[in-house]
Image 1 (cartoon, helix red, strand yellow):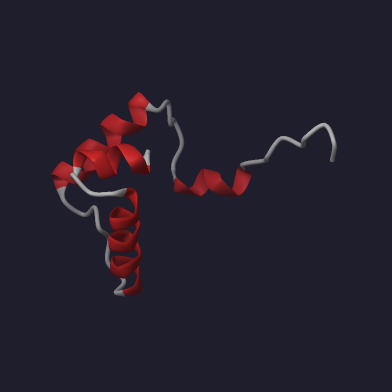
Image 2: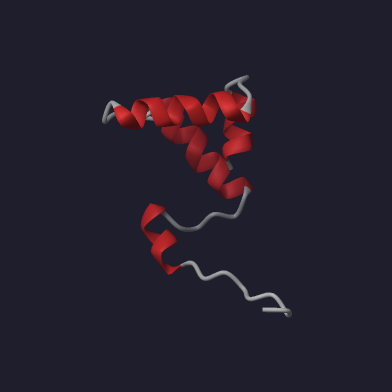
Amino acid sequence: MLKGMAEYEDMTLGELLEDIVLHAFDGVSTFDGKASRERIEALKKVYGMDYDAHAANRFVEARSEGA
């Protein structure tokens, strides 16, 4: 998802992450605009993301066979 957004914005993934973090430190969102929200919704469909940020608390990683 982030790589797709970075490509759309013509940025490297590192540049996008830095932009997100710097905005977060200032208490604002990088993606407040209507166009950004529309791109995010389109990318969520492409990547099959039918969940939001609150779902992260429910994610469970599969255990490897050796664990």
